View 1: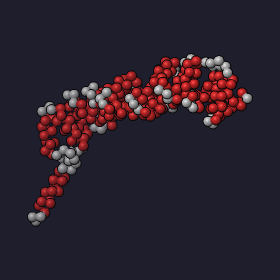
View 2: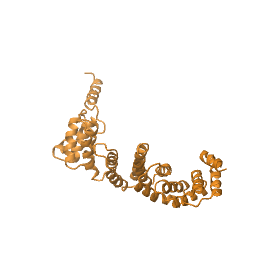
View 3: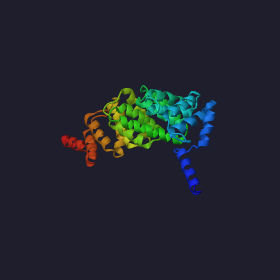
View 4: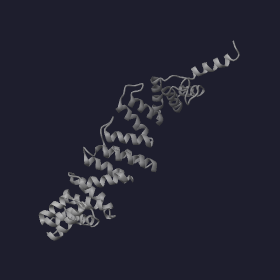
Length: 303
């Protein structure tokens, strides 16, 4: 045989044998295989990875991967528990079963894996593979967030997204997720929540009280929108009109057009404050000057 052809032929054969080798070499595969058969959980997991990725000189074999992931997972190896959960979640090598996926994710989450704690929390929040449970979701989000700034940021973003998903269907539940995200430092969630509270048409009394408690920090710091929201909650949900006027007044003084219109209303009809048509007209005029159509109409009626 031509001397130049021999090494070329050998290289081709090696290439065929090593198709899909990826990260793990054949030598490493043999090492994992030996360790796995001796009961080493890490080796079992690595062997499963070779089969699920088609590395180490073996072809993709999801059933074989599942076998080894399960052996490692049963020994408490967190990475294997996560992979086994993913296989059930995606239906790779096993029948798709989100409930079984959550079972394995939870085992890994209990060992402190922050990313899987976040995933588990999301599933409890949405009721995916498990009965919807906001308290349980909150527990896992808190565990993940406690592991550092990076995880806290991830948690806040997901909680904000959960609030957005719910906002048009259930403002009360959306507010709970925005509040959690805002408490983790998510500025978008804080602004969205203040807006939600400022224009919420219906809210259970206990939620309204919690909303007022949460808003008070920002209102006392001089946030005009939060001050208006405080007034709206006391006015429309807690029916404490004098307290509502106190907050409307603070926001109105800062130029908040909604608060100015409400001050006009309160003075006009004596809600939470003695009637005073001159003061009513003054506040309506300020809101009207900012283009508020309702204030313009009220002002023309008074004149």
